[in-house]
Length: 238
Length: 402
Image (cartoon, rainbow over all chains, first blue to last red; front, side, top):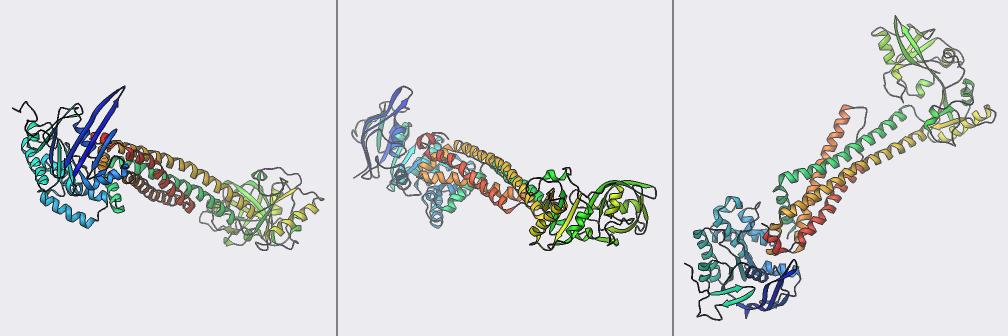
């Protein structure tokens, strides 16, 4: 069974008098454990797709089934609960809470979910160790390097053991070397079974994914799973 | 989200913006402190006046010439003119009433007093021997006015403590001859310093026999007749009997006003109680202003932390949790401000009491409770709108603002 099933999804925005179709008649199916890169020029609908997959946004039409359940009819509090339990987000600008320490930032999803402090502590300690942040537990974000911040953010995104990890340009604010580290980390998580969807316009990064989706004008232009032989993009980086 | 976590999260958020937090706590504390100090002043004034009235004697009924209304105390009585005068004979007649224990006629005027070349203006009160015990005056030296015929004008005087100090210094005063107006009087007693008593400072008073005072001021009328009822319960009867006796003596015309100490006390108590309430109302306005400031601060907080709110939503916080976090922060700001304000107010009241020891400036309990609960109430009330606004933010839009 597919983890994600999108059927005939439409999403349009009203900008003044004109209507912009961010997503139009989109069909997409992603299996559990897949590693998918979503690529395309800015304004192609990548971010809208990611927000939709992450239940932060609702489609105007169409059906979205997550783990077999139709999530388009859920209330916003029910969506929040699904986000809390099943989905992790990694953002380009990290989105750490500046007044909280690394450990507190990692614990935040558990705090919001009302998990007991004792269990929180144990899981945060484990996460700090797994992500090589043991020495940084009590540091606030402004005392951390970019790579460390993104590692804290990834630890936070995975602390609730989600089925789906959504990363929006996770290396966009990082230099090549730390970006590489972060991608290795995400791929490692994917290897452990987490479904990983990365939005990027970095060709090299996109090429590493097992499945590549190319978006253009709100439509799925190319899906490497549907046509595995043809290269996703004709003009190779260079 | 657990309660302890919500509290900690709100506290950290408040501490994350120290200036903003300090200012709103300050505003709230000024509001509460204003309520505490102003009501302490108002209630202190009430206690002070009530205390003053109580100190003029116990179970007192006062007869004053002139008729106003059907009863009660009217400040106009004090300055009203006299249709038919009260006389010493009127006062003497009251002594036969069953509910009346003692009677003291009172004639008042100002005169000059001199001794050894020193001269000063003083107030002269003409009365009888029972005046001193009725008014709770105590003597430090000598004795009081002679008991006996009220119409005999013995040339004696009891002087107040300040008069004694200024005229005699360290010399003994009792037995000395002084000049009051054009009379020579012998000092027979000195009053204990008290410094209080209804605008008439007893320390600067000279008390002489009532007939002498009338002769000095060339009149045969009285300023007041003081009556002491046999007991607290006998006060209404004493009042009724006094009115009846004077009416009979004045050919059936009820041309005097008889007031009781209790009525005056009740009037002042009510008057100053209302004043305190009014002052508390004015102070409450500053509390409302502080509440609006807390709302403003929370609205700024929602705008400043839009990105954070978006993140909390992405991490799975339901609208209820976000509302609660912001409401808790508003409640914390106002309750902390209320506590600080309460302490500041009590400190202010203490300072007032230290500066004016005779003035019992204690804030009444009702004002403290009302002030604190209004602070909390406005803080919560004005915290609702920002909290709802935060909870309603669109997560996609909110996440873009970082």
